[in-house]
Amino acid sequence: MTSRRSFIQVSLGTLSTVSLVEIARPAGRPHRIGFLGAASASTPGTLRRVEAFRAGLRALGYVEGADVVVEFRWANGDARRLPELARELVRLPVDVLMTQGSSGTRAAKDATSTIPIVMMAVGDAVGAGLVASLARPGGNVTGSTFLGPQIYAKQLELLREAVPRVARVAVLMNPGNPGNRTALRELEGAARSMKVTLTPIDARGREELESAFRAMAAQRVDGVVVSADAQLIANSSAIAELALAHHFPTASAWWEFAESGGLLVYGANIYDLYSRSPRFVDKILKGARPADLPVEQPTRFKLAINLKTAKVLGLTIPPSLLLRADEVISS
Image (tube, rainbow, N blue to C red; front, side, top):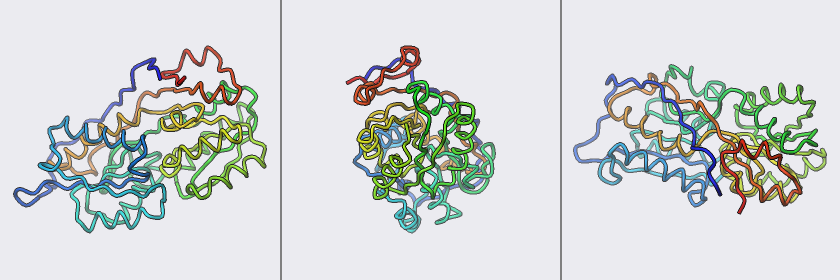
């Protein structure tokens, strides 16, 4: 794996430091942070995200066990578990809730209207009704989004550039994710200009993936765009394996797909967003209100291409596309 350009830098809006709501704790008790995870704790991608989050805490001077205690709860790729896990963290209680994905953030928001929630790299936070606006979130939710203008359209464009024969593309989606509206809106506009036919295919979790890929095969698709959903990301290895078995090139926004065997990834540096999320925690623990902390957006994106997968699929990636890649996976 060779790095071609430095990872993205994400601009963080000016965070309010006015102490409006002080989070109190008994003398000597560490602050308790609840971490609501959508995937399994043991996957390589999850381990790196958690380490990025912990590195962010350390960079701010927090010592786990002394200053803060992190309570982890994992849904293991099953979104149906998220509401009860969120309620469990609220009952502990925790001082701040960290959440993954729109479904996890929604579960936390439904579980509490008072405990501050920091979402880590969700999709369309406004469209999903998680915040009122990115500049002034309102309520008890803030954090970061990994989506930027035309990210889905760019993925389709790159997939078509890598595989010019692509004419019918499946869009793998979790039907429970409200961010699907944004994805389809962007993809439909790009597909019309490229004369590509889109075929939305639903899958809520691992148990529905095989039937989803059978449906793609029945529709005779040429490629797959995997929508940015925490439950789908949690099953990136299974999706990559099924895509290779069906000989489908894939595009996604999440780094795990390229590492698991997806053909290409175009998206924000998720690990950077996770390492920056403790800045929200720090401000909140010092008295800032989530309602006043602007949601962080990425301003640059990076491209990864898996040449091992290209070889298995019998594809020759255009040199011009390889030159633009930030990272090429060749071994």
